[in-house]
Length: 168
Image 1 (cartoon, one colour):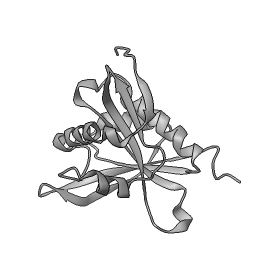
Image 2: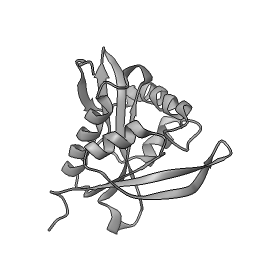
Image 3: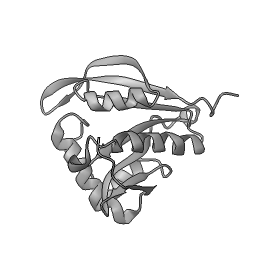
Image 4: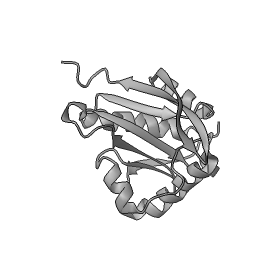
C-alpha cells in the first residue's frame, strides 16, 4: 500500500460536486448502494446528519468522503446511525476508506452516537474487510432485501457499539 499525504476535514458545501462525483462512481460499481442516481445537495443534506460529515483531501482534491444517516426518527434511536464511506476510484486501495471510517467513528462518538451500522453488499469484500478491522461485527444477512437494476440483492448488516458512549 502506497502512503500518500492527505488531510481530513469537515465537508463544506463547496465540496458537494466532488462528493457527488465520488458517489456516482460508487453507484456505477453496482456494489455500493441501491441508489441509481445521486441526488441534488438539498436532498442529500436532508438525509444525512449535520455532524460527522468528512472529506479526505489528497493531491489537492477530494479523494473520499464519509457521513452518517439517521436509522429512525424515533428519539430512542437518536444515538444510532448508518455509515456511508466512499472513495474515488483512483484513490482506492490506499487505506483511505479505513482512514475515513475510523475518523467517522471518532466523530460519531464525539456527537453522542453509540451504535453505528452498515448495510453492505456481500460482493463488496473490501468494504467488509474495512468494517471488520474497525470493530464492526456481522449481525446478519438480509436476503433479497431489495432490487437493484431489476435483480434481487442481499446485504450483510454490520454494527459497531461504542465502548465509551451510552454505557451508563
